[in-house]
Image 1 (cartoon, rainbow, N blue to C red):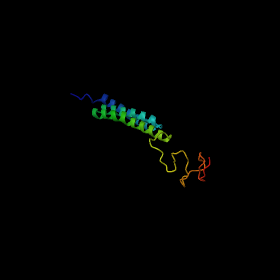
Image 2 (cartoon, helix red, strand yellow):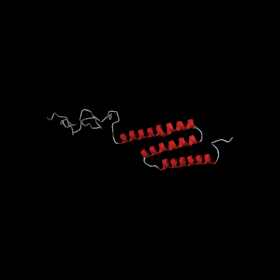
Image 3 (cartoon, helix red, strand yellow):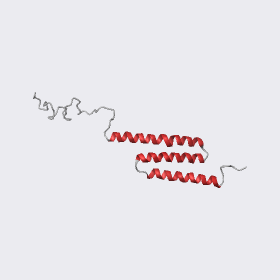
Image 4 (cartoon, rainbow, N blue to C red):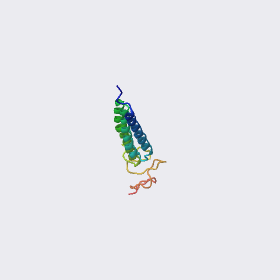
Length: 131
């Protein structure tokens, strides 16, 4: 009795799965936009899972589909979102802790730590009690 997963039809299926894997890997490499690359990476993970299934490794295929198709692209997209928000000057979750930043509303001179002449109350570096 012959093995049902041998012969010319099985070889053609394996070669087709390998060819799809090579095409998807090439697509991942050639995709330049990072968000699109995450989507293509997800498709590559699915094709790689199918290849493992064709090669009779269903446990590896399930792991690949779970991790390579869902988790890794999700982490990439979340990282892209976080870095783009940081680059655009979005909320970082921390207060501005620069030493020359005065939270009272007056600008300070970073060299001396004194209030500058642009003080809206008129009490700049020259001192004085101007109204």
